Image (cartoon, rainbow, N blue to C red; front, side, top):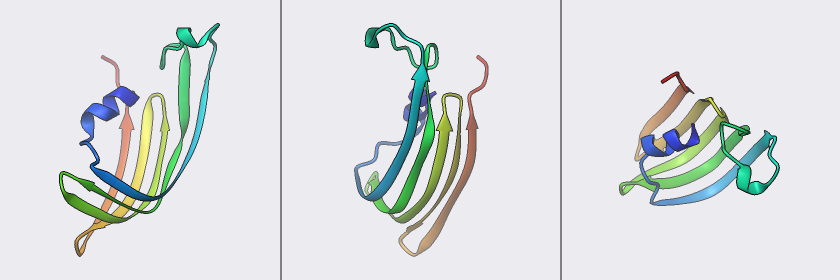
Length: 99
């Protein structure tokens, strides 16, 4: 599902600030060459933003705080930020669905 997230999100031009990443990768493989995410290897964890500033397509997004919890088949997003003087709040639940 991480590949799908990358295709949905625009490219971040610049980012500054503190971010904590807590990730667990698990599964069963005989060698590193055998790793196939979401088939025999999985990941879950959280990304915590602390007063980050970033720009997307020359739009500055400041005072970004929040958390993204994720696993191989879902992501829960709770982010607050500002664009100029305007507040931005994002709450989302993303789930992988059957094809």
